[in-house]
Image (tube, helix red, strand yellow):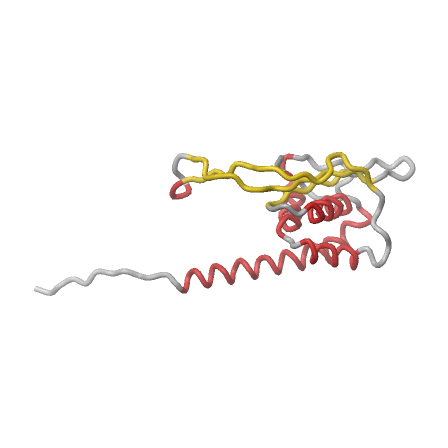
Length: 168
């Protein structure tokens, strides 16, 4: 069920599977409304390409595992709701059909559809550069800034304890 287990197709333009995992992680954290607006801007008013569902958006549960201290024995923490989707763009002519995959926390089917469509388009050489520049980079920057702000807020609450030594 993990999007990172899918291997990139041969049409992926000079990008490794690590690059695809990175853009899929950005898509998985992007809200539906932002993703839809950015995808429409990136397509410059053209309609989204036609596609067929390999796996229509479906909602399920995934077991969340934890480790005490980050290195202890793993234990089952609980379950989380996830939505996943897989689609295949309709191939034109003799071109190989591109498959897009999406998986994210939550119950938003439209978000999974948009993320899978964006993943498929990002794998196409004719769309990769413009979509990466207009879709992935701004959201990645926004998510990094948000993460840095949360870390800064958490660091501000840190208390330093020290021991004073009595003199003789």
